[in-house]
Amino acid sequence: MNAKELRKYFPILDQEVNGHPLVYLDSAATSQKPVQVIEALNDYYRLHNSNVHRGVHTLGNRATDLYEGARDKVRRFINAASTKEIIFLRGTTTALNLVAQSYGRANVKEGDEIVITHMEHHSNIIPWQQLAKFSGATLKYIPMQEDGTISLDDVRATVTPNTKIVSVMMVSNVLGTINPIEDITKIAHENGAVMVVDAAQAAPHIQVDVQKLDCDFLAFSGHKMCGPTGIGVLYGKEQLLNNMEPIEFGGEMIDFVGLYESTWKELPWKFEGGTPIIAGAIGLGAAIDFLADIGLDKIEQHEHKLATYALEKLADIPGLKILGPKSGKDRAGVVTFNLDEVHPHDVATVLDAEGIAVRAGHHCAQPLMKWCQVSSTARASFYLYNTEEDIDRLAAGLLKTKEYFSDVF
Amino acid sequence: MSFDNLDQLYRQVIMDHYKNPRNKGAIEDGSVTIDMNNPTCGDRIHLTMNVEDGIVTDAKFDGEGCSISMSSASMMTQAIKGKDIKTALRLSNVFSDIMLGKDYPDDMDLGDIEALQGVAKFPARIKCATLSWKAMEKGLQNEK
Image 1 (cartoon, rainbow over the protein chains, first blue to last red):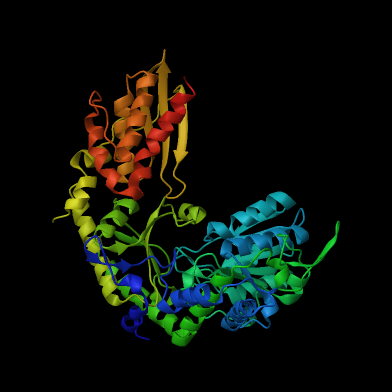
Image 2 (cartoon, each protein chain N blue to C red):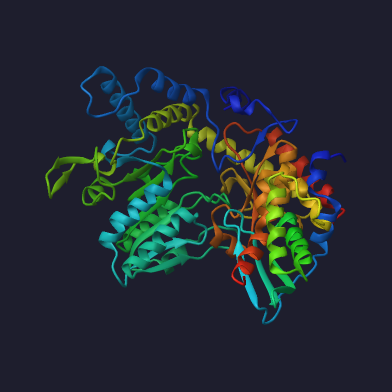
C-alpha cells in the first residue's frame, strides 16, 4: 500500500497548522476520515434519511437496507458467524459496560473473580470495578513484564476456576503491545470463564477474526478506524447474547408491549433500544469498505514499518525514553515516550507550534502510568496515511523541543 | 531559534519559577490542606496553607505537572502569602479573567503573575495554569 497515495482521500490532512503542514500523529485517539466515509454520511442525509425497521415507505426501506447492510459488513470484517452477533452501540465504552451490566450482573457472584491487566484503558477497568463492587467479586490484575508485554505464565497464575470473566485489550493504546488473545482465551475457557476483548486499538490496525480468537465478546469503536464518532460494535457469541437481558429499554427493542409486561425483539435488536445510530452505522460500513479495499494485512505491515522506523529515529534523540516493546514488529503503530525533564504537555505544545499533533497525558490508563512509574507521557500514533516523512518531522520537532528547553535545565 | 509564538507562553519568569519553585513542600500541621488534580492530564497539586485571623500567613505546594501548572502554583503561593482571604480570593478571580484574555484592574499589582498572561492564547493550557488557583479558592472558601 502507498500511504502517500492514500493521503489524497483525507482532505483534512491537506492543511497548515501554525504555519506548518499538518502532521497528524494522534490516530489512536481518533483517526481521520476519508472522503468515502464523509460522502456516505452526506448521501445518507441528502438522499435516504428515514427511520429504520418500521417505515412502509421507500425511504424507510432504503435506510433499513443501508443500516442492516452495514451490519453485514461488520460481520464480514471480524468474521462473525451471524449478523445476530453484531450489535451497534455508541462505542467501545458502551459495549464493555453492556457486557459488565448484563452478562456480569447475571453471572458473577460473591467469591468469583474478574481478571484484567495493568495495561487496560479506563473503559476496560471501571465497568469491572463497578461489577466487583455490585457483586462482591474480586477484581484481579495480570501483572506485566518489564517490556510491556503479558506472559502466559502470569495469565495461568492469575486465572483460576473461580474466574468468571477475563477481559483484556488486544492492542495497548499506550505501549502498542499486541496481546496473545487467542492463547489467553484458551486459558480463560479452560477455567470456565468467558473472554472479553477490548479491540478498540486492534480493529483499525490488524486483522480481527472472532472465530479464530474464539473470544466470547469483543468491542470496538468506529471513529478510530476511519468511521464517524458515536458508533461502535459489540460482538457476542449468539448463545450468550440470547441468554442476556437488555440494559436499555424502550422503542425499537420490543416485540410485544403490555401494560405490565413486555417481551423483547430477537437478536441483535433487543440490545438496540431507541432509534439506532443509523448514519453512524452506514458511515462505519463505508469505512470498512475503505479498509478492506486496502487490506488489513497491508495496513498492519505499514504500521510495523513505521513503528520500526520511529523507534530507530527516536533512539537517536538523547534523553528520550520509549515505553513498551523494543521491536517495531511486536507493536502496533503507537510510540509513547518522555523527553528528559521536559513535561509531556510542554513537549506537545512545542510540537503543535511546529504543526505536529501528538497527545500528552495519561491516555486514559492511570494504572498503567503508575505501573510504569510516570505521571504522564507523550504519544505519537500512526495510521495508514502516515509516512516516514511524518516521523522525520516528529524527530526534528523533538530536537527543537529539547533545544528550546535546554536553557531551563 | 525563533519561536515567537511560544515565547509568549514560556516567558523567562515562568521558566525561572518552574526551575526554582518558591514555597515548594508542605506545611506540617497546616490549617488548610487541599488536594486537587486535573483528571484529563494527570497533573496534581497538594496545597497546604496556614490561616490565622483571616490572613494567609503561609502557603506551600507539592505536586506534579508541566511548566505552566508548577510555575503558576509557585507564583500563586508567593502572591497570597500575607494577604487576607478576601484579597486572595479576589486575586483568584482576576487570574481567571486573565486566563480568559480579559483586562484586569489597574490597582492590581500582579508581579510575576503577569507573565502568565500569554497562556490565554493557548486554550489547551489554561487548565494547567488554573489548577493551583482552584485549589486555593476551594481551601479558602471553607475558611470564610
